Amino acid sequence: MSAIFGELLNFPQQKGQEVCLRVFGDEHYSRYEDINGYTVVYDEAKGLFCYAQLEDNSLVSTEVPLDNPPPRGVDHHLQESLAVKKSKIVEQRLLHPPEISKFKEVVQTLGPNQGLLNGRILSIGKVRGLTILVNFRDVTSTTSAADVEDMVNGDNYTRNGNICSVREYFHQVSNGKLDYTNTVVGPYTLSQDRQYYINELLIEEALQLAVDDGLDLAQFDSRGEGLVDALNVLYAGQSVYQGQLWPHNFIKDLKFGQIHTHFYLLTGLGRNPSELSIGTFCHENGHLLCRFPDMYDYGERDDDSQSSAGIGYYCLMGAGNHLDFGRSPSPVCAYLRDLAGWCDSVVDLNTAGTYEAQHGDYGVVMKYQTSKPNEYFIVENRSNMGLDRAEPANGLAIYHCDIFGSNELQQGTADKHYQCALLQADGRRDLENNEDQGDANDLFGPITGVALSSTSTPHTREWDGRESGLVISDITNSGESIQFHVE
Image (tube, rainbow, N blue to C red):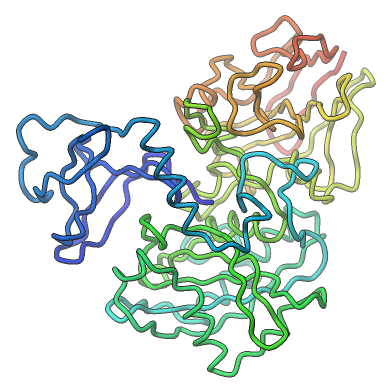
């Protein structure tokens, strides 16, 4: 899933010009405000975004378009009640086909499979995905298949300021264990205007166009299991954060001969090649290929009414795919790399001594084991270089991990805690309190003496309050190597 946390984005209107709105939510539930903070809804009858008002705790259109002043008496930042939000989320989930019922949710904030999502895992080896480009009848892109081929497969890809190609990204963060390439086809022209596909999923039509063009899907079944490894569909124009066009991944079981489709990604292609970025593509394929959970809080789900940021910008599977407008996505954090089997070496921090954390050494995980096999701490160098060049903070990251936790639960108690919590050096818990997605004070910089212990803030106690015994001191400056001492 690709969540948006208050970003300003452009939205099409059927009977008007694009409008700039602030967005909060994901493909299951979202809310929109204009730049002045007035809540808006899309009025299908008018074909325009209009100011919203509350009726029976639900947002409804005032029928006043945004090119007019807001109606008298309409307040800023209107929100629906939790009960209404939950009912709309349930209604949205019912739109999904029955083949996904055995997975309950394709994307979750917890990992039922030893920290990972259930389903087919393709995180190691050579994997060949299929990427289909489509234009709408009324909206096209000048981006070619060759442009996208460079973005997904290229060597030393830096176009538009991107840090690398999709293939290079996964090859680097996987310690060379995942070689993920894509065959790019199209663009094909869909049968309807863009507005139609906000309410109708375009995946089947796009794939049928490719198959009718002679594409053999068997070449994308690297495991010989009769399944397409990864199906990516990119539509013309900027990503539309509405309805079925909201960037997302899910399951679609379509059969062509002896080959079935399974997981797919849908996102925007951009209006021209200058808008290509790898962030969302990498994030969603983290779900498709590796079965990584989302490392952020969906907000107001599963009897948890408080929104939080989860791991924020510090992982691709948090908000890290949005860094630098998607051109410098954060690396997959050490917690998930370890679960994916990408780390060849485990540095045991349970032995006292001085250690060095090397930046970008993605084949190593530095781990301190608690009294519980499922709960541990991980230390990682996240200095502002390489894939971390756009991070808001600079220094040593320390995570409190539990494969049985949930990124929905920010309370930090024995029963309710994150799967992977960043111990923010300033002790403010801004991520848990949903104050931001990360700031300059989150990571540990140079410290003489004790930086972290059972009595510090933040602390190293286990989730149930028991002392873990971890004490970290004498942290050196950020850079290629950070030294620290474990007592």
